Image 1 (cartoon, helix red, strand yellow):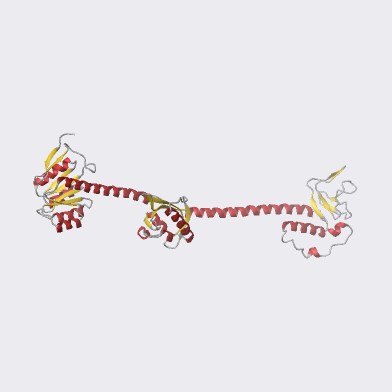
Image 2 (tube, one colour):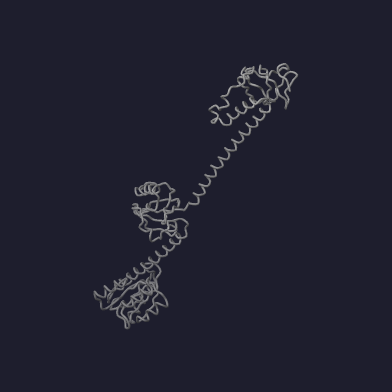
Length: 415
């Protein structure tokens, strides 16, 4: 590093800086406007600030200063309080009206408490009296530029965050430790029907159904206690107009310096998913009912087919009634639990145990065969019991005697 360079700081004060340009304390230098009707002061400040790495514009009156500002916005302005065409306070007001981000430092050789208070009220960043310490001026300017750049960075970060939260499909919100909304995006407003301004300060529990409020309160208690919380839960939001919206929500704690300061949450509209799930459940129930009904019909058809086979072998109405009655009991066991009037009627007393007990017919899966004879399809067999009734084709008579058609030609004849 070379020998230091010395410049006149005004009123006999000399300020030493490192040789050549150097970076400002806040990084790359900014664009500075110096407004002073004293050419010597303006040139001295130009030299000092350029050595600090700044670019400098100068003006000798308020009008010229505003014209320079209109042509090229600056980050900071150093303004003499007493100008030929205006006061520095008036110029301060005009600069803030034109460019609110520009930081203004007032300098004066006629300081008073009143003007100092006016400078503060006018949002001046600094107020220095002549003769001033140039190092103090540079330090004040660096702080002004740091504030200005931090403010710009904050606005840019807020804008990026706003763009993210506004274009995200979920509602994003921040709760304080009391469960009140302190931030919400436009998607949250759409879900609830409230404007964002109306939501701020609203207890989150008041936007939920009683069941959802209890679950959310338990999660908030866990978050405040620093406990782990399940990642998500489903609940219903109560809209401003009274409607309900199903959402899947989650909460997570936000900590600062090791302490929980609030909760960050997100909610996603799942109303359509819930409707689809309900429709699917109803469709499954309907399908299950249809399958059960079809199975029942198939059973009934099989029984009716079997009954038709047996009825073809009946020769009297009593036999047909007995067959039908037996199958009705099988088809409708509950309705057949009590005897019908017909079943209580007296039965014929003709000879044979079948006449008394009534034969019960059952199908035989394959034709019965005997030595030298067979029962062929379309034929019938005669019961070997004393009832001597003809059994249906491919069938057998289970009489009260427990006998079955004889397998010999003497006891079983083909029709």
